Length: 108
Image 1 (cartoon, rainbow, N blue to C red):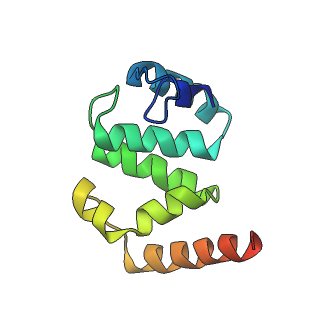
Image 2 (cartoon, helix red, strand yellow; image 1 turned 45 degrees about the vertical axis):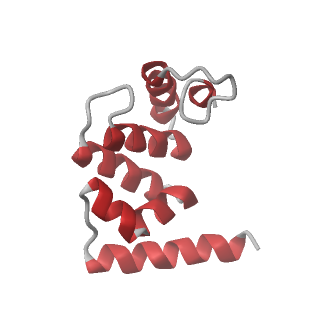
Image 3 (cartoon, helix red, strand yellow; image 1 turned 135 degrees about the horizontal axis):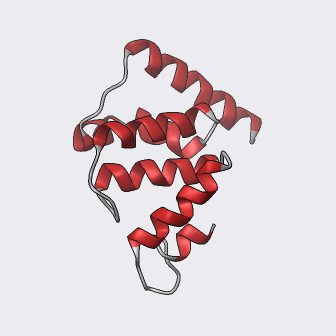
């Protein structure tokens, strides 16, 4: 993904979070789950954009709904919920855990 060239995972050592956010936004418009997840992370952390916990969480949940394994694992991690100030309902947590388990079973 082109967004990674400018983001946290930049191989060049050159980080431009605003450019990364723009490129991830382009891919997200086409429904790319990992890009939607990256947009959520950028919003949660305020990387290249103003920090917005609500929109960040919504984007990560959207990526999880598209079976993004990393987004599901992120949302289910209690440490991240505390750090970034979001929560899941008990029903959401159970459904996401089952969804993540299914994905992991299919990739084995």
